[in-house]
Image (cartoon, rainbow, N blue to C red; front, side):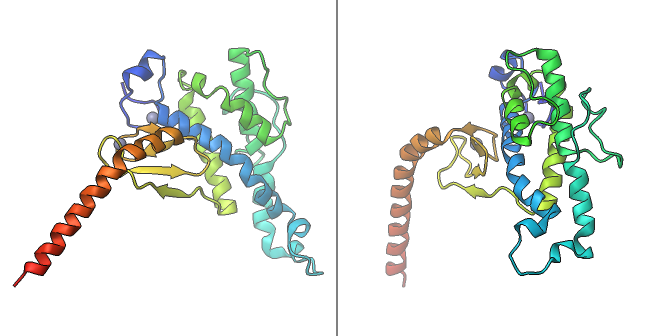
Length: 238
Ligand SMILES: [Zn+2]
Ligand SMILES: [Zn+2]
């Protein structure tokens, strides 16, 4: 069975838990929810640059040059929409999804279906509260068909944020190879896991540290032996 939101084949541990979306896709949703609130200071600064910019004594932030950006950001940050079903009510008058509206509608939809002990934040709640609440329901969402639409809409929000703020998570390649053998392990900002780009394996920071301590010393020894062998051949060359 293939993941509902990517091309991976689900592992038996995933299907046994009733998941329709794989662990890495759930992890990516969590990373996006952690990322969204971090864009807010820059988004808000784009709307009101004169509040946060350097104190030059001018009011450059009110010049006409920034108006299209400010209009776009204002629209994106837009007011909370009335609670309703996902994809139905979280658009502003220009049919563009709004950040708070999209998150609020998903929180309301999950709340209506799941009835958790801790109810969804009320309409108008701040972005961090909405993201934090949704984060607690990612595993449940990954077991429902709605995860596909949720992923599409969350990805769109993240792309809009990144296009306005120019802030993107950094990816760092890690030195130890993945247990699958590929040198594909990367650490990505705001993600709770280290992921292998080749096999999709997820490792926590602690698991990676243990794995690195195991595999790196033999790899270093092999590299030194190869280097010594290569130097000897160079010295003996005619
Ligand atoms: Zn997936
Ligand atoms: Zn791997």
